[in-house]
Structure formats: C-alpha cells, structure tokens
Image 1 (cartoon, rainbow, N blue to C red):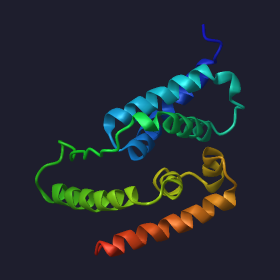
Image 2 (image 1 turned 180 degrees about the horizontal axis):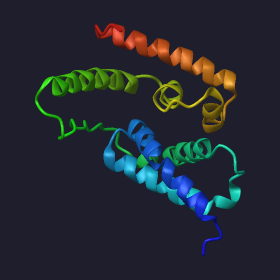
Image 3 (image 1 turned 90 degrees about the vertical axis):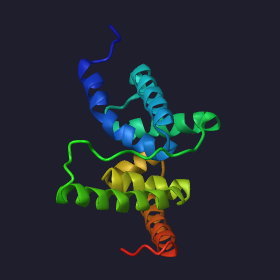
Image 4 (image 1 turned 180 degrees about the vertical axis):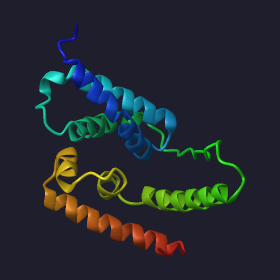
Length: 168
C-alpha cells in the first residue's frame, strides 16, 4: 500500500484529460505531451505528502510546469495536427465540424506565437476555464499578475490573428 487514500488516486486520475490538453499545448507533440503527463502524474503520486489538500488541479499544473521546464531541453517543438472524429458523416454536421476545426486550429496556431507566460494564462483561464485564483496557484503568481498576463496575452493573440487577416 502506498499510504495514499484511494480517493486521491481517483482524483488525480480524473484530472488526466485536462493535463493532457494542457500538455499538448505546452509541448506541441503528442509523444512529448504524453511523456509530460506521465511524468507529472508519477511525481504527484510520489509527492502526495506535499499536497495540502486544496486545489488539486492547480497543484498538478504547477508540477507539470516544473516538469516541463526541467524536460524542455529534450523536447523538440513540433506540432502534430489531429484529425476529425471518424463518426461524423459527410453531411452538414461534418462540414460544420470542419469549419470549427479550421477556425480552432487557426487560433491555436496563433496561440503558439504568444509568449509562454501569456499563453499559459490564456490556456488555463480561457481554454481550461480555471478561475483567476486557481490559475494564480497553478502559475505561482498573484491573481493580479494572472489578470495582467491574460489581458496582454489576449491582446497579443488578437494582434497576431489580425496580422494574419483573421477577424473575430
């Protein structure tokens, strides 16, 4: 027995889809993202004694950021594009999905050009729908810094999209 409550393990497991999405945006390759998630989860499980019982998601994201920084030198920044779900027909739903995917990919590619601290604020607050407080814990910065980075990041993203001829 590891000494961890089973509830903790289940709670960490429930956060894996969010960690995967965030890791994919941080690493930009599926293999590197999966390695980062695995490293994060393993570190979290080993470090259970350091968890204060509050804000599990923020704690896990903090671990992920630290793991990513330590692994960054080994990671190659190359993005692999995903495919549309196979269960869609070629009818109107299919074309709506294609249009949404193309728009989302355009925004996500532009987001890759936003500086890292600003991009992380956008990913946590806008993509993962975390509160400013949760994001501040995950980023280890004050709430005001999260708000500032989010404002500047959104502006930078709008400017990038505008320079590429994309309008909202």
